[in-house]
Length: 229
Image (cartoon, rainbow, N blue to C red; front, side, top):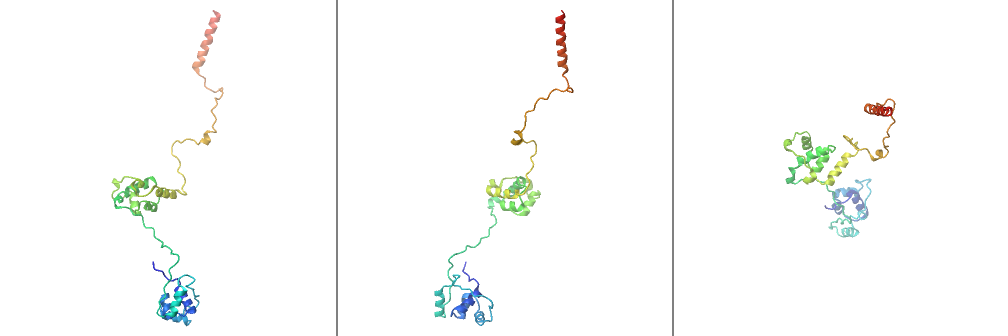
């Protein structure tokens, strides 16, 4: 990227006030019209604008200014910046190879079934698809819905396990944990406090064992007959 002058009008104000450069040289360096520079010198333009020293900002050297003052035909050159700021790059949408695009509907179906907490935007980031396609598969309106088979997108190579875990964790934040279904084991903290069940004493209202009672009576009767004989 070509270097550009910062605050050209403020720089022109400073050059007019502090150098013997011509209007044409200042106009060329600052990207202005010579008449604009003349209006600045006459006080008709840029009123209230504080001049900015291009030497302090590292955009122009003293030697370059001296060359211009000695030679009216010399064109001023912007100094090379000491620090280059890299251009910000937009994150491009996830690219999916042609050979794997046919697997995307199966991956979407897998995500919809196994991770219903994921939003459409998250699924789109993971497998590189559109919101309309996700809705069609979710509502079983996809043109190939009858032939789709849920398949793990990580296994298909459409996303990494790290990316999938990250999106699932994001979607799970703030959600209440799902209550377990069916019989579950008691926590250890509860089982440790449980006491073995003690046999309770027989009460008057407890039901007697009839066979045991008759067996006892028969034994007593037999014993009394032996003693009489």
